[in-house]
Amino acid sequence: MAAIYWTIGILAGVFCLFLWLIHPAMGRKNECKKFTTWDYAHRGLWDMNLGIPENSMPAFRRAVENGYAIELDVHLTADRQLVVFHDDTLKRVCGVQGTPESMELADLQKLSLSGTQDHMPTLQDVLALVDGRVPILLEIKQPALHSEICRYLVPVMQTYQGPFLIESFNPLALRAYKKMDPTPLFGLLSERYPASLHVNPLVKILSTSLMLDAICRPDFIAYNHRTVNGTGFILVKNLFRAPVFVWTVRKPEDYQKCRKLYDAVIFERFLPKSIDNTDVA
Image (cartoon, rainbow, N blue to C red; front, side):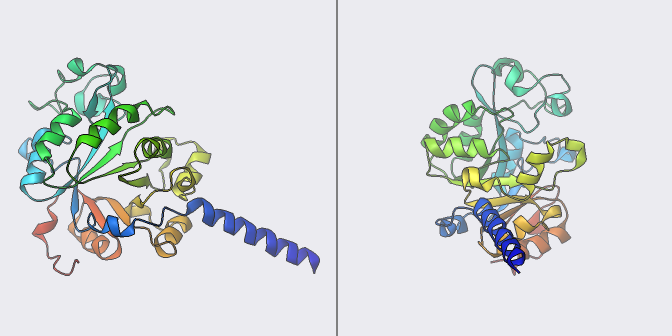
């Protein structure tokens, strides 16, 4: 009988530890609400059928003109400039070897985005264009363990007068930013990583289950809408009731479902307002 009690006690302790690890920040849910009434155009409202590449000035201009909030990605260049670009490498979008971190701004801006006449914008240029007219969901790209990008990003965002949120897959980036400026709302990105990404198994388990919340205590969760069936996610959403942003929704039928189940949707390849979403609060 004593062994049973010990087993129950150990299991209860492990479960309590798990709850402690995954719990998000709890005090700013109401602040998140003003951001959840928006739909977020993934990398801007891009459309290669119109010759508008992702994370480009035309994509961001089109999002603003159509009344969509913007999701974008920020890297730090070799000469310590902030540029808006998604991938860790330049190959897919720019057709050359290298990374944004390995090149200086002047050289990066000579590169074409997806074969168009558009070039990689700086974060400051994008902020000047948006000018507070729609919210910005800014993802910090931090490929290494060091958080140098935050030293440059924080002062820029402190001078920006428009609404924005900060998110990242890397909890160390969120923790570093929060130490410098705890004012913005912070979101931890995650998913059930496919094998093709070659994510470290331990990191994969900790991230997918949201146990990395313990590092940064995010205000909201941003999760892949196709893999929202994990225990950690279910508990964070339903027990702790953290606001949930889901990504990246590419079909109107998925949008309708996600808008009912979650707080905000990050979308691309269709226009949410072109379908009936009158039941969305």
